Structures are given as C-alpha cells and as structure tokens.
Length: 228
Image (tube, rainbow, N blue to C red; front, side):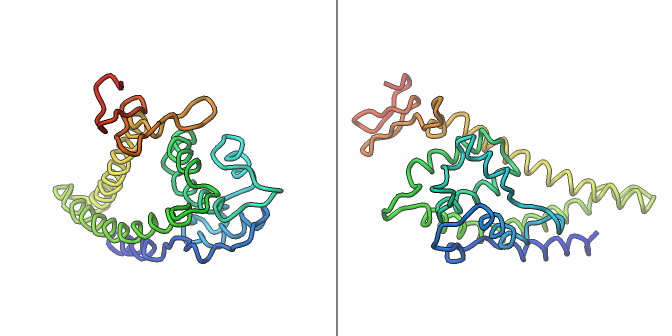
C-alpha cells in the first residue's frame, strides 16, 4: 500500500498547469485547440488514449452558453483560459453549476483589454493552486497514516490490507464530498452566481457599497434583511 501511495504522490508532483506563456498569442482553429490541450494536460490523463477535450465538448460548451462563440471559427487566448478552467471544474461540478461560476467571470473579463483581464485572473489563480498542491500532499500523508491505524484487529492479512485501503479511499471520497457540498451551497446562495434566462448574472454591485441578498446595495454599503 505504501509503495502504491508513493507512486500516487510522485504522479501528483508531475501534474502542472498550463502557463499563460505557453498559450499561443494567435487565434487557433478547433483542431489546434484540442491538440494543444491534449499535449499540455497530458499529465492529467488516466489512460494514455484518453481525450481531454474533444470537438463535441467544445461545441456543447458553446451551445450551453458556457463558452463564447469563436470568431470566424478561431479561438482566442481568452477562450483557452476558459477551457482550462472548465476542464478542471467538470470533474466535480455539473454544467449548470459551472455556468453559474464562469458566466460572471466571462461577462467581466473575456476579451477585455484592461489591467485585470482573463490572463491576469488565470495566472493569479493557478499560482495559488501550485501552493495548494503541497497542502494536498501533506493532507494525503495524514489520511494515509490514519487509515493504516484502522482495522488493526483483523487477523487475516488480505482482509486487513483491503479494509485499510478501503478506509483510505473512503476518507478521500468524504473529503471531496464535503468540499463539493460547500461549493454547491455557495453557488445556490451567493447572489453573484445567480443568472437570468439568458445566462447573465443578475447581481448588481454598487462600487461604494455591498451587495445585498437581491443583488442590490444601499448607499451606506450595508444590506438590510429585505434587500432594499
């Protein structure tokens, strides 16, 4: 078990995010986009022949208003940033939940030439993820140690080994489940993630105040219980 888990840790260390400098500054056709993703996210593959991003996936993202339509069948650098975010989110969240998170980001920063744009957002987020991966590894070590202490009273070696591994897997599943619950609760209750029928954010934020429960703000920057 320890040797197997060590292999997993070694695999985690090899996983790297796509750096902004690696994304071409020219617009790409669909085939170029899928080829790029397949090459640069290869370390995330479970099986060698896995396709990380297909034409059908990209077309569905566009149809579901999750990804802006390409310009003359070409995808910009901002499209690439959004696709990478979507790639990581889709293993945990539903398409509708990803829409709730990504659509406000797209509205504010897609194709915008200003100090804060999609590239700066992407770079900031994934720098955090690099640090977070170290904490994840430490947490995995802790869970492994705890799982090794379970079922110590089982005499049969094969059964005891199986149950220890099963215990470790359940700890990981519970961890993912709890974090998924937190994300879904934020999506359901935080106004900035709520959308209208056209997939637009319904939140209205006063730069001088704070957003209330209905997406409004008062002049003092404090929201009351009725959202007035």
